[in-house]
Length: 285
Length: 234
Ligand SMILES: Nc1ncnc2c1ncn2[C@@H]1O[C@H](COP(=O)(O)OP(=O)(O)OP(=O)(O)O)[C@@H](O)[C@H]1O
Ligand SMILES: [Mg+2]
Image 1 (cartoon, rainbow over the protein chains, first blue to last red):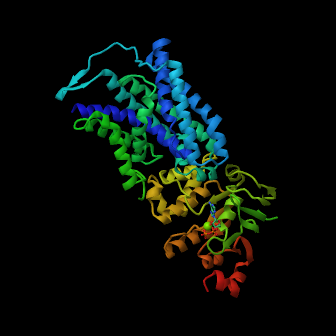
Image 2 (cartoon, rainbow over the protein chains, first blue to last red):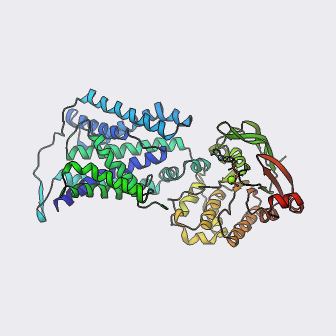
Image 3 (cartoon, chains in turn green, purple):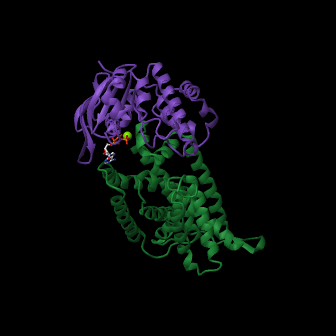
């Protein structure tokens, strides 16, 4: 039962992060490794505002997301935008993305150092639920906040014109242009959404564990697994995929060494690619 | 003055030249077919007219204005709408959302156009909230065309709107296209049901190996022995 609870918490974190990654991957047509760097920056920005500037936690998170969005859009303007207009293929883009990830990670080391950092919150004891399941208040906040955030993202994608245009662009960018959608503008909005998603997931992960520069990189494999399982470009699929990956990883710890957790994500990802490359909800083979 | 005119267009992919000095034009309220064997450059011509490919030489004029080099999102604002041969719908969006995207550049109320599309294709009415990727091929074509009608274009470019459909369904779609044309929308259509398309059209062009091969009134093309033998399947 405890493993189930852990799985839900991990699943919530992965789901939140996977929504942004799936849209970015689909709209930009490549897997962006620098997303790991965005997670880490999100966590460290929030920590800085909270621990050092001593702002309230929610304000710190919101400021961090704003800063992250600006950073992501600036990076896009400086690198991917000109590559897009030159018609650079996914391989070139991916290599640039890996380079950016390395750059972002070293920048975190440079700015904040490599030592483990934590949110300076009063230590509270875990709440004990039936079946001796222990969940901390922070973890309850993570679950609640992820649900709220995913609901807000759903409203945005479902109800607003730009949200629909974003899903349309993810479906078929050429057709989006034919319909008169300014896809460059949609891409900017997508980076903004990715900042919310990555910033929140990075923060949740840091709240549940601690901050190290490598934390984003470690979450990247489960994130990709969730994205692929849910079908690249499908935000709802990413949420379900995130939950499945989170649960499988934590439950596997019941009968395997915890160090195998990444392997579980990897196996699920590989199986998906073999059996149904379009993901759980994709059409066709 | 023709409504739409492509003049001596040269274009292709990368360094490969596909279209060699191709010219077509469509007059107001006219329906014009482009036929020709697979790989003859019909889709390439449509993509070049709509700015998805650059014209290397030649020009594209619309209502007497030079629109060569315009991007698709600029061309759609001029009053042309285009339904590509492949991937012409947003599969994870619902029928209604696809139509919304067809009206993306509009800021006014378009409920009347929505209504018109559902009247033209009643089969879509019950499927409004379904994901288009889950619909049948025929219904997907209806969505693709309906979406292109949301802007009340003065001309519609259709690339093989009946591809992969059963003959009776293909005939139905072609008749709807004629209905659209009868409301005053000019149509430039690429069709593999060449004979049927020509019967509904005013004029036609035969494209072969990236060149204009024949052109003329539909009846003349249908009666032409060589066209019949080579391009209309005898
Ligand atoms: N994206 C592309 N990149 C490179 N070459 C292409 C591309 N699309 C088409 N071609 C080539 O251009 C030529 C013309 O193709 P096009 O699609 O215009 O033919 P078509 O007349 O529309 O044929 P079909 O009846 O099969 O639709 C073909 O030789 C094709 O192989
Ligand atoms: Mg074609």
